[in-house]
Length: 203
Image 1 (cartoon, rainbow, N blue to C red):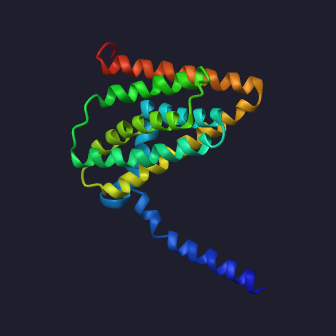
Image 2 (cartoon, one colour):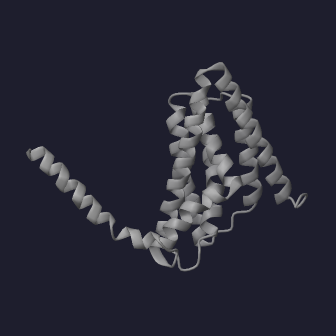
Image 3 (cartoon, rainbow, N blue to C red):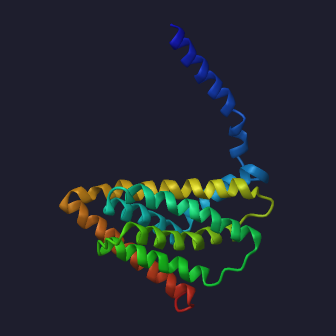
């Protein structure tokens, strides 16, 4: 009975603690709520970011342990550093081009089932993460809380990696492995389009 009462008390405490957050997320005004929501939506609504982040999860799942966890952890951590560069106004050239190249490279890695040493894969993912984070930081909404914005895009990135991992688990079956590689090819093609767009060759 004591355990049941304790659980009930904790549940009620959690509900009351979360209640003030409801109105905060009901709008995208200023401060923390604006930063968190804007940061969360930024990777999801940007297709060039979305496909690269899903590709990290796909590639990690394809490579297996420990890459399945190391790559999706390394990317958001390093991306947060890139976000700090962006917020600070640091000038990082070729950002859009590198973001597009990340889609091409990661997509092809999945499509071709490339299996480099773990440190090479982690280094490649981390380099791309700097540019993705920088782009997020540079697009911080006016009057939004930078820290909340950073937390938002890191959480969204982690969820996108998780989506890639869930899809990547299909590699355990031959048909699933082909589907994962086809997904990588599609991501690479999307990255190619964004590269041409960044170079001004397509609308």
